[in-house]
Amino acid sequence: MPDYNRFPLEIPRVPDMMPAMKDQELFEAISSAALLRGEFTLRSGRKSRYYLDKYLFESQPAILRELGERFARHVGPATTRIAGAELGGVALAAAASIASGLPFVIVRNAKKGYGTQKMHEGKVEKGDRILLVEDIATTGGQVLEAARTLAELGATVERIVAVIDRQEGARENIEGAGFVFEALMTKTDLGIDE
Image 1 (cartoon, one colour):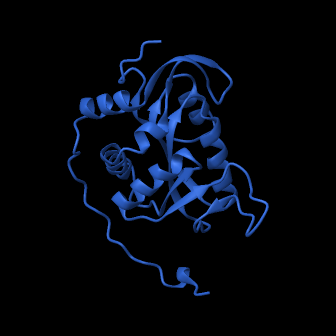
Image 2: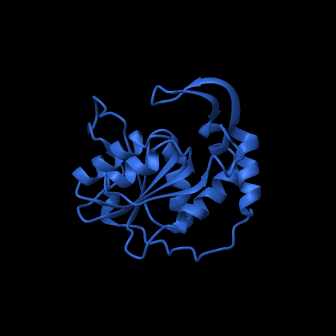
Image 3: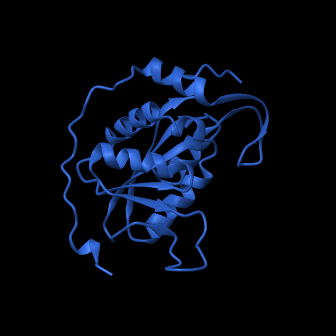
């Protein structure tokens, strides 16, 4: 089998572009596509009267393209890769990769028991500087696990950027663990006042 990593594809970075959507248009598009009302149990185990179904907004091409372009603006001059945790972060990392011209990595939730048995898919090298993208940050648990996995591989997570901060402790937990945290929007931006 050929070693495709031997011939890295150099893709020039796409210059910063004006967003196709204004902030309020993006907030409304995500809210319309993904905001559900009812009784829900979150990953943290906490109960909530609303749920933001990331797959409903990530599967919309216009929204995904806009998110990729916005994530690309968080790429620093030393950033070498984009990363996202399975499953929700995969489409976001791919969109950010396309918008920025940087390769992306998928961080697994658990090691697979076959094949290479890695905790990640894609190439990570010691010294890589990574933008880690997240879908919805509630407590930050999953994205912190992904950040620790990347650190164990010898990479530095430059920053963690979420699409939505539910404003329920993720920022405090992520920054408390020593990472820079930013969000493209908050639940307040989406008009959620729970």
